[in-house]
Image 1 (tube, rainbow, N blue to C red):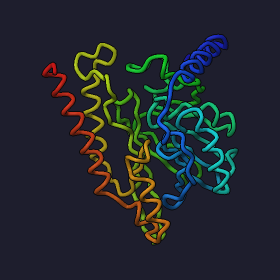
Image 2: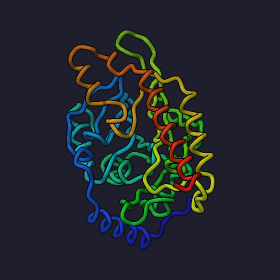
Image 3: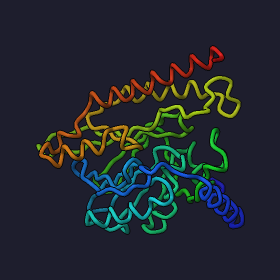
Image 4: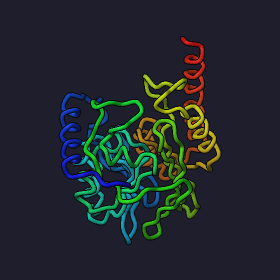
Length: 289
């Protein structure tokens, strides 16, 4: 990827800061909550509704998604509360390059020294602070983050024993990525974990005759095919409400343990709901309604 000039980076950063100052976020996006263990080496370190996940190992940690810019403080505090050191985060991954999931990448990269890995299609958005997004304009820009490497479909990212496989599930963004891994639960059974890439259709998205993204319909359909084909016992997502994170964490703490997060039916239902909503919106736009 061509590196941005220093002046260009400064201009983009200034624009992102100005845009963020004029944008209000839902309160649950920034409300701090106590971190919790999902299963094995997976921890939730995000806010009430914007997910950030920490996958730990003695050789270093992986952080998936960081939320809006102000969420950096909550993530840093949550990592410390769990007894881990942010300096041990080796890699930061992304499910989608929208400001509500990557705006704190720059701060977390600075604090940890981690490498930022992003899908090839979303890398320009992360590096450019949202510039070039097919839907969102300057009001949704964010601090640009240097991308250390681009991830291809099917590539496996490893840090010590932690291995995460990238599955390209485009549409929501051109490079939306679903990540999968396997962990061993407290009973000694291997469990398939899926960090679902979003397949929701944002308001204002043109699914028909989209000059900025001509292949958007086909990409969304590909995403649903990929996600439905995954073995999914534990499903997690960029918004905690999407996988009922708070409720599952409470059930786990009340004695249900790992079983609280084993939810293949919920995973399947979440994908099917999203696909149904997509098809309804597609039909509506085709009919010109």
